[in-house]
Image 1 (spheres, rainbow over the protein chains, first blue to last red):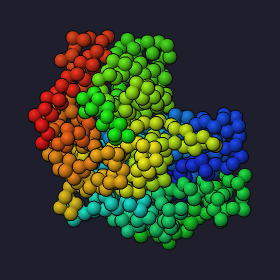
Image 2: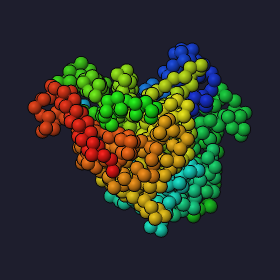
Image 3: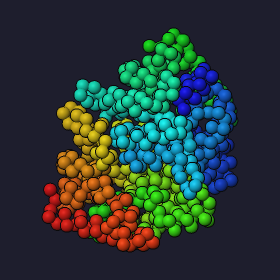
Length: 310
Length: 310
């Protein structure tokens, strides 16, 4: 799957992923009101509003980008109807030719991780049929439980040509609390990074591995080190834009081949119409505001990379 | 919510929680075949089989135990229909007077954790209504992202009288890979344990805090240390039975008041009919096999605790 992602990135000349992380407060009033009118003040109505919002965004930006990253929590908060819209969003994006990175951050003991891996990247056997629940192309994985919690995901990646991004150094302010702890003279995130390289060593598809890593744009110095530790791992970089990471910060996450990283922006894109820079679009043209924000983000990153990676 | 859990534990004299972690291979053939006949080889049929299995188990054991712990991965593997059965299971158990610990192991950056906390323990606002998605009483939380990923759960615990169990030292074989790393002379799990005590310090409801911890029965020596570090945290102890932990191992997890820990068994109970010890029940009486396994587990733990805690 990583080879397919790279192909799409090269085709669009955009190492960019848009985070479909819809808060109800982002959804334009007209869409929300129509859903509430039709379905009452229900979880179904909230989920329907999110779906209409997503669909308009996808229809307007899909041609510019290689991939999307829906954050499952934003759907899960609306219970079962929300998760039905998550699945619908995954399907619709795949129909539009987008690679889908499910931002699920799952991770558990072996037998339980196997169920997550089956539900998100693989299949379950029901009678004579192999059926898939959420069928994302990639998923994010939490490594706190160690190798036996990650291994079932590796097995599914191998069998079904899928990929994962393991949390190594997250973009949030308190990520250092545990991730930066010195362990044998090295911070924990380096140890996790080494494991990512190990886990992915026999899962290469071309130059890169199906096992990537999440490293926040907000920590470029650590990104530089991790880039070296995991030369064959793609790095999914959140934290650009709304969280404070700049295009200049991003250079360290790329390899000399211009590949090796894909940068996420969520709120900065899908909620662009609420940003001063794009407010002229108005709420009704929220999708066109998002399109312009994608174009600007791609331009920003291309400019930074033009000067070469670090 | 921790005070309610303790009340139930005392009422049943059973510091025991049953893990509702249904694999399709555990479901008796007759139940599975009926579901497949009625709904075809679909995710809906698989989910329905799981529901019938759960319902029979709950009906047969609910009077013996204070709480259940459904593992959401086992439902999530069947996609949206599976998660609908997860919610139905949570509701049904609550109707039966059981406390529900959602074993969800979620954890993300602040804004995303807030969505998980709302969806599982709290509410979302839809128009003028406050609606709840999965409404468990407790949830398990992954700490890898640090305090700002845990804080939204604490806020919801405070507002809605709910509780969490934070992963500190998990029961699986490779849990030590990261959790046991020495950080400033102490293993990481101790540092996480200290944070659990801090996070819970102003969330006490009686002698215990709404912020508990997960510590595997398979690591009793570490349990002894963690018991001291987090005196006011309830410890949810997985790993008894099928994973290898014995009743003797459990003593260290309890405080001198005989409280402070609740022991989980999943497969050992719900799949008891496949165990040599209970095979005389036969597959058709899988629920009575489970009942006997619960009675034996309670007896086993009572005997161990009778000799006093350590």
